[in-house]
Length: 340
Image 1 (spheres, rainbow, N blue to C red):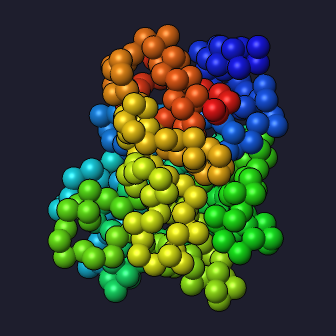
Image 2 (image 1 turned 45 degrees about the vertical axis):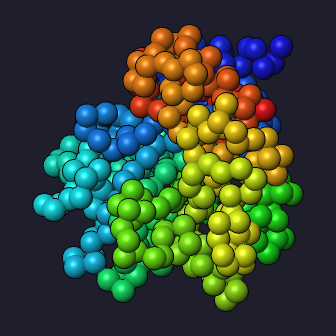
């Protein structure tokens, strides 16, 4: 009975107003690794939302930012395509909905902080960062600089890798398999950052150190030096694969620093990849392009019934987050339902 009523209750809350209650209010004990939420692809684009604050106000459980590193000016540009003339996004310099848009990542993080300050009891938000061209550590835009920027802009808000370790585990894999994740109620007002290698980086034959490996190495080194508390991000394994996809990493010592996985939903539902393995080990699994699973539905404005059914379907298929370009009109964005 509980599994049947929860999506309906949450949908009604979304329709009468996002601020009415945290998304998991009806099940405060629901653990993060035992729940499924809904995310929006490329939420920073002005064609999606006039301002980043508009995307945040939808109550979506995940929002995506695309970041380009600029080693010449030591900037973190936020844009879909390569920003020759700067950033191209809906982050506003003068506040949540004031001042010029098209700002760098620092301002986007400032918008996140301002929104958090205005909504301190918001449900957990995952911010997915696609590093379009990867890090440029020699140019002063590497993992440590990104961590410092996030720590400065989102002090006390970010749920970090060290929080999952709880001082009791030596790596993220051990912590996840022990289900060290907190409940959604405990994550009220918090932000988790996910990072994935970008499209330009993966297509660049000269780039031999992708974002996932570089950040995992960084995490490993921080733990070895007793500084794991400085890390603010969870690296994700990008792309579905049968079995344990971490075996792609030649350095087996890095595999234990990946507990978040990100791939196309069609690979996990009818595509030959068993997603139960992720759920069984309490790993987080982001399923993208939720609309493409058979039978396909509209990528932006499916009916509320179609959107709810797709969330329920992918939750049963062990997704932690399902993402698409759905608009608030679907009523699905604030949904949180049991996983599995």
